[in-house]
Length: 263
Image 1 (cartoon, rainbow, N blue to C red):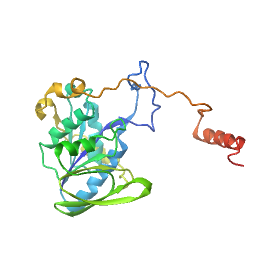
Image 2: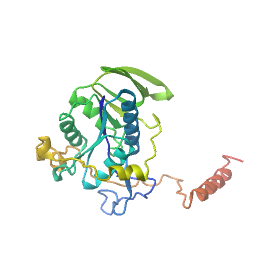
Image 3: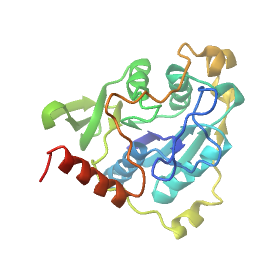
Image 4: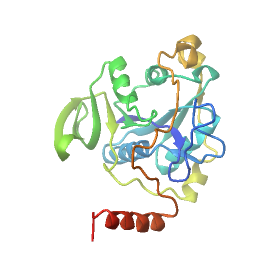
């Protein structure tokens, strides 16, 4: 089974205090610590486990700048067989549809049975998986937390739906799945694995390599444009707790006791 996993380099929210920049057009990105998107990491782990069960290979792909190569190498150290970086100045500022068009062009250069994305990464919109399936004209399932290969042409997938219920479906291959966290436990990536892939060549494909018109993607082709970032005003009676986690917990307990929530 040939599996492609779409991954993305994102700010690590556990390592950063995310703040809106002075002009409200973006977040402050100076000195941010980046890592692979959490949902994508689960997708890569699932791809590796499927490959180990039924054979084939796992390719990880990302749209980004030169620094995005680090997440490809991390996922290759995790066990992915190959990585591909889609990078071009023309790609900067792409909206969801632009990013999808770039990925589609790369996908059509290969022959993949299964394409995985994280359940969400693209600014929380969770749109890339569904868009990819639509323009590739293949079956799609979102919030997938179970995959079973039935034969070379069909898989069974479980989806997390409202109310904690599970929905089971059979899908024909090829197809696109958006993977939910909790489907597995991503393996630890050690220094030895990172060193092993440090010198492996990762091909870089630009607009001309993919046969994409530069003005159809990036800021020039974007139909959705971000116009503002802002922190919502505090609601009446809202209070932001400061301090360490233990200090916040202690303060929260004091507030709940004072208001009669607990004794």
